[in-house]
Image (cartoon, rainbow, N blue to C red; front, side, top):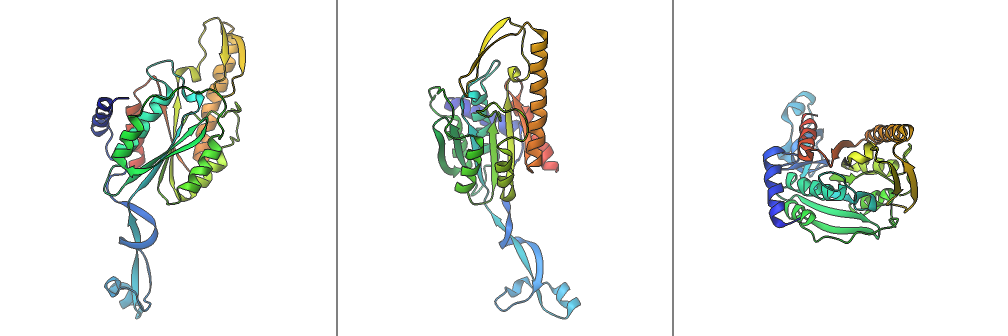
Amino acid sequence: MSLAAFHSLELQVRRRVSGLMYGDNEGIRLGPGSVAEEVVRYQPGDDVRRIDWNVTARSMDSYVWRPRADHELETWVLLDETPSMAFGTDVTEKGDLAAQVAGAIGLLTDGPGNRMGIARLTVDGMAYSRPLASRKAARRAVVTPDRPARDGVAEVDLTTGLDELSRRARRPGLRIVVSDLLGADGTIERPFAWERALRRMAVRNQVVVVEIIDPRDLSLPDVGHLVLVDPESGRQREISTSDRRTRAAFDSAAQQFRIDTTDAVRAAGCQHVVLRTDQDWLLGLARFVQRWNRS
C-alpha cells in the first residue's frame, strides 16, 4: 500500500472511528498515579499528602490512599501472514485487510507515550518489529513493500505465536490478534489448539481477536468440478460443487466453525470482532469500538 493510501486510511479512521484508547491508560498495578485505588494504614515513609482525613477521623488512626498506576499504553498486534491469509475473492485479500486493520489500530491508539509493536506469523516463523510511537507503527504496518507469496506449512502455528509473543512482550497492555483462525492441520472442531494460549495471554492483557473472513469461507458456489488446494498443507481434493449435498455440508461446517470460534474467543476472556473482505470493514470496526466504549 502506498503512502497516499495510508493517509487516506488515516483520514477515514479519524472521521469514522472515534477513540479506542486515546490519552492515558490506567494501569493494573498500584504505583505512581492519580486515581485512588485502596486505603491502608499509614506506615513510616508514606506520602503524608495522601492521608485520607475522612477515614482517619472515623478510625482515630492515620490512613493513606494508594493510587492505581498510570502508564502509557503498549500495544502488540499479532498479524497472521500464513498462506491461508493470501486469499480473497472480493474487494481485497484477507492478508491485505489484516494489514489495514493493524494500521487502524495504530492510529486509534495514538497518544502521548503510547507505542505499538507488530509480530508477524509467517511460514518462516515469527518476525518482530520493535514498538514505535503508535502512528509510526501504523504507517510501518500499512506502507510495506510487497512480499512474495510463500507456500508451505508455517514453522510455528497460531498457538506457538501467541505463546512466543506473551513471553516476548511481558509488559501488560493491549494485544490485537488478526487472523482467520484457520489451523495448518485443518481442524475445525473445538477445542482449538490456540484456546489455552489465548486464555494465558488474556490473564495479563486486554486481548481483542479480529477474525478475518472471505465470502468463500462461508459458502461454496455452484461452479461445477473444482480442484481445491489447502494453502496451509498443500493437500488437494477434487469435488463437484454442483452437488447440493456437498454445498450444504460445506455451508453447515463453515457456519458451525464461526459459532465455535466465537465461543472459544469469549471463553478465553477476549473481545471478538469479525471483519469481512466483501464488506465495509471500517464500519464493522467502528461498531465494535462503540460497543467496547459502552462496556
